Image 1 (cartoon, rainbow, N blue to C red):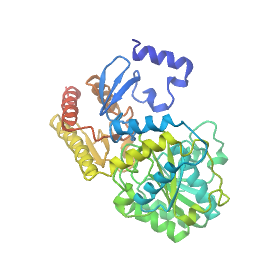
Image 2: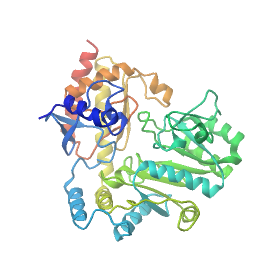
Image 3: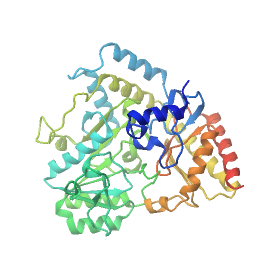
Image 4: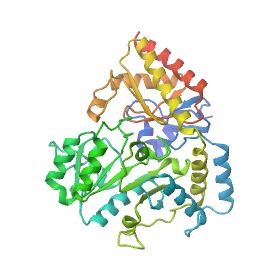
Amino acid sequence: MPTNAELFARASRSIPGGVNSPVRAFRSVGGTPRFVARAQGPYFWDAEDKRYIDYIGSWGPAILGHAHPEVVRAVQEAAVHGLSYGAPTEAEIEIAEMLIARMPSIEQVRLVSSGTEATMTAIRLARGATGRNKIIKFEGCYHGHADSLLVKAGSGLLTFGNPTSAGVPPEFVAHTIVLDYNDSAGVKAAFAQHGKDIACIIVEPIAGNMNLIKPVAGFLETLRSECTAHGALLIFDEVMTGFRVGPQGVQGLSGIKPDITTLAKVIGGGMPIGAFGASAKIMSNIAPLGGVYQAGTLSGNPVAVAAGITTLKLLAKPGFYEDLSKRTRALCDGLMERARAHKIAFSADCVGGMFGVYFSDKVPTTLAEVSASNIEMFKVFFHAMLDQGVYFAPSAYEAGFVSSTHDDSVIAATIAAADKVFAKLNA
């Protein structure tokens, strides 16, 4: 049986950095990545057969826990009939109708194969529908690795961004304005200066890529009112929050309707899928109806769609989100209580099945506040929890996820493990 270290060394010879997505490499926390051998419910087992309570859940999709029997059965039954057709299926219509029925802002939806593809196309759609070029995004919000979104803010409030990835020409981000999340004044100033040229705002309505950061009162309302006033479109990137924080995503919780919504993760039940949707009028700009081109051989993949349909049906059971929210809150409250008992500066927050933990006295509301927390203590905490058999996100800038299989005993075991770790941190 190979060890995690042996597998990582082997992987590093054939895969850049030894991983197929950067955060998996443990670079921000140090140490050796765990190579997963199998997963079930709230747990996974690594290559050395050590069991972990899993709080990343494939970064959100595993809301029903790993290898849910009904989802697995749906995938098996779909696979028997073929893995991909490159032609339409009835199941694509069914999942589209489910998404339209549940998301307040969507009248029509196009399926794609990833969240990155969904956000990339949503921006292209916004530009095509408005005839404008500039976009607004917020530092700390991640919307996939499309060129125009790999950008960091300049030195001034309205300074256009500079690429944060090699291989992205400066010209590709020249039309991207980067502002601070939760800064309503900055949004108003940007529209005052560039309003007639702004095609859209794209935002994580609850951020999950600078840890969990909720919008402050009035922020989402400002985005909506400024876009409406200036003829720009508002894109809610609900790739992470869609069906994760509630049955209608953030737009259901907030009552604010975006013009375009992007989805992924939960809607595939763990299989690769994405989607973007809007009003029929906006979607009429997409080929073959309009001039905004988007295509994909694996769009509407029958196996992924089968997993998604089954997952969405299970999420519709009465009380599902109430139970999920209760367990996630119990986790956060328990961690905070144990940290305070050991006089550790620590806070936690959650919404639905998403949560964030921060080594700071209060819950952050900005990327700067997350960065000002005790990142070094988080690294120690992360590895100590690994030793206790609990797997949190290997970065202080990532949200965590609870599934419906994280029952009271799993939450209690996590809090008990954290109690031991906090005691050592304060020793």
